[in-house]
Each structure stands twice: as C-alpha cells, then as structure tokens.
Image (tube, rainbow, N blue to C red; front, side, top):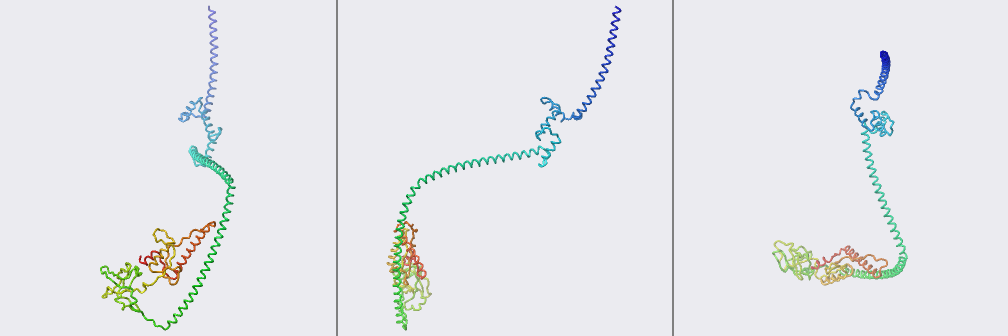
Length: 451
C-alpha cells in the first residue's frame, strides 16, 4: 500500500511539473502573441486613421453616412459606401467612374465658368430652363412644320383637283372646237353681208351729204346775190335822203298807253295795256301829264311805274318814282322808248321741249312752242338772220351711242340725223351768243309772253 502511494505521489509530482513547465511555456507564448497582436492593432489603427480619424468618428455628418451605409443592402462600410456613391456621381457628372474629386471639380468649373455660376445646381437649373425653353420652341417649330406640311398637302390636293378640272375643261373645249368653227364661219358670212350693207349706207350718206353741201352752196350764192342787191338799195336810199332834214315826229305818236285808275292804298295804278299788247312783267314806263310834254330828247317824266300783274288788256303797275307836288293822276300818258306793240318779233326755235309737263322732252313738242309764239302775234323762222329778235332753245338733242359696224342701215341713218341735229343746235347757240341775240328757254319765253 505504501509503494502504491509513493508511486502515485511521484506521478502526481511529475504531472505537476509537467503542467508547470507547460504553463510557463504557454505564458511565454501568450506574451509573445499579445505583443504581436498589439503591433497589428496599432498598424490597423494607423491604417484606419487614413480613412477616418478618431475625432471624425463622432461627427454627426460622418455618423449619418455610417448609418446610411449600414442601412444598405447589403450593409457597407463607410468607405465602400462613399466610394460607390462617388463613382456613381462621377459617372452621372462626367460619364466616367474613375474620376477623382480634383479632376471632377476641374471639369465642373470648366462648365460653370462660362455660365457665370458658382455651383453646379444653379448652372444645371439654368441650362435646364434653357433646355425646356428650347424644347418648347422645337415643339412649336415642329407643330408649325407639321401645319405647313398639312397646308402643303392640302394645296397639292387642290392643285391636283384644279389640274383635273382644267384637263376636263380642255377636253370639253376641244370637243366643242368643231361646233364653234362652224358658228364662226356662219358669223363671218353674216358679218361680210352686214359690212356690204354698211358700205352701201355710208355711200348713201356721203351722197346725201354732197347733195346737202351743194344745196347749201347754192343757198349761200343766192344769199350773196340778195345781199348785193340789198346793199345797192341801201346806197340808193342813202343817196336819195342826202340833204334831207330829219324832223321829229308828233309827240302823240310816242304815247304807249294811259293811266286809267289809281289805288292809293298800295301805291299802284292801272294802265290800259295788257297781254294782248305784249306787256310783260317787269316792264317799266315813264309817266307824263300829256303828250305835249314828251320831247324828242325824252327827259324824265313826272314819275315812273313798273308792271307787277298782267291781264289780257290791262295791267297793274306799282309807282317806283313820283314828283312831289305833281302826283300821278288818272289820264296821264305812259311811254317806253323800246316798247312797240305793233312790232312783229321773230323767233328761232330749236331743241327738245316738254310742253305737256310729263317729264319727257321730244322734238314734236317744239311745234307747240311755235304755235304759242304764233298765237302771241310773233313769227318763227328756220334760220338765224340779222332780223331775228330771240332764240328759244329746249334740251339738246340726244345723240345715241355710235352703232356697231354690223348695225342695220336704218339705225345708222338715225344716228347720223341725231348727230347732225345736235351739231346744228350747238352751232345755233354759239351764233346767237356771238351776235348778242337773247337766248330763252321755255320758262323765260312764257314769262316774256306774260303767261
């Protein structure tokens, strides 16, 4: 039993020695390992400091970035998160993922400097606004272009339709050429016929004009002969009256009428001359007490009157002048030096008249004017001469438009007669004006006649 105990002690002691030796070795090894790990830890801390410093770890912005990196899928370190995002940002800005911050800033500055902007957002915003505006202008231009294309297409369609209509019209006209040609041949034959008729009418007018010229020349020659004869008579009468004494006529022969009544209330008188004695409105007379006071030198009478109303054989006249102390009295005589109730006035009548008052002046109503003049006791003559007292003109004869070359001969003859009548009307007016012969219209003729 004692041997077994000693042996156990020896074994125990051996074991403890071995364990002690092993613990010492382990301790030495552990120390060595600790020193190595400490060095590695220091190296890693130094290396980590190249990425983030201890003072930066507590920075709110850095911690927010760390949290964002952790929230990713999969979670990332701060450096990995920043590296990946920088590469994405670099690609979006420059189109390349391998940019450095310095190169990227340089490129951004190259873009912002011409724009006069200090940050990328402002520059991009301005460029974006310009881009939007440019796109709107491009869109409007595109709309305008499309509208122009539509208009052009519509115009092309209309042109095509017009061309088709034109072609159809040409085809229709071409089909009718033969018909028109036949009609033209017919018209040509008719025109040649009418030209022949017109030429014959012109020849007739020329012959008539030549005959009229011959007649007028004969008339002129005859008038010249009559003028020579009249001039001879005048010279003969002048020779017969040479040396004769001009004696004044009897004053009583100068009396033209008499005052037959007085109206003192309105200062008027009645005279015994009226329409039948050719008294007209406005005619004036000198008043004398009797015929013996009328002298050949015809001084002023004791008064003067002016006709204001005309009857057939009497007239009313207002007193326009009177002598104080020698008033106009019943039985006084009246005198007008140019008034001659026995004179036969001569008239020339020409033109178109409207005696019926229907608003239409015709050549036939000129005969009514001539009949009115004859009823007044005057004469009408056909031509203007030195003894004509008045010319009565109506409306100028109407000249129709010049007939066409194919007009009937009767129409051409009517045109020539109307043109000749208008020319004679103008010549008569010009001659009367040049000779100082009074020219009356219908109303003035009626006034002259007291109608």
